[in-house]
Image (cartoon, rainbow, N blue to C red):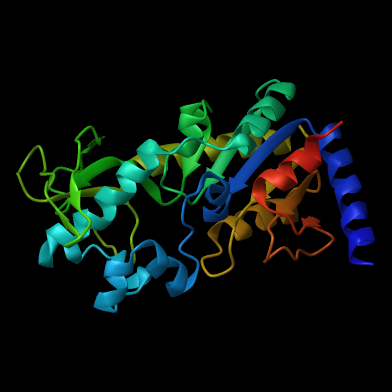
Length: 280
């Protein structure tokens, strides 16, 4: 019975994508799993990736807090420096190529909305001007004190001692020499410089507005978006609620449920789901 349901959802989702005029890709941390990236799902997933932090008894939510850049910058930059190096060394998986081919079929009429900070969509050759990184990007730095509200490219090479889990390099602000930090929205974060993301959001909102004006059929392909921080899931659902020409195709091996009036549910992993959706 479950297989019959999946096949029915898959068939309907494929038809909707085939008939769509444009594509919105919404992606959470789960899209990176097929590239070997951790998704930090719960403390166990986080601690598995960073066993030294487990010994400290620090959760992901505790670690992803700007306070560490004041109280322990070596630990803060061990965590974010290691992640930056990991993302730099990661090759986007097959699913990104499938999505890139798909949007080309729609005359490059697409946008990407992601909570990921890893820059994998840019690395996979998607247009920088068509990406909204709602939580910022680890590939850009800012002053921890936000002294002049500048944002700059993360061009430093960062070395991390994984045994002591301490950064051997501490990036500094180019203006005031205070400790720099990634331009990422963290928990309890009042100093995040949102200037770059606001520009992305303005482009995204203009695109969405044009979708409605032109009454284009919009396929929202959601991959790996969790329920604990539901920013990505809510965005796709809200678009489908206000735009009768939009439907969400939710690809998620665990949290796959969706109101049938809003879209289609595929309990599959990212690459597997995308391959099944686009196979002729």
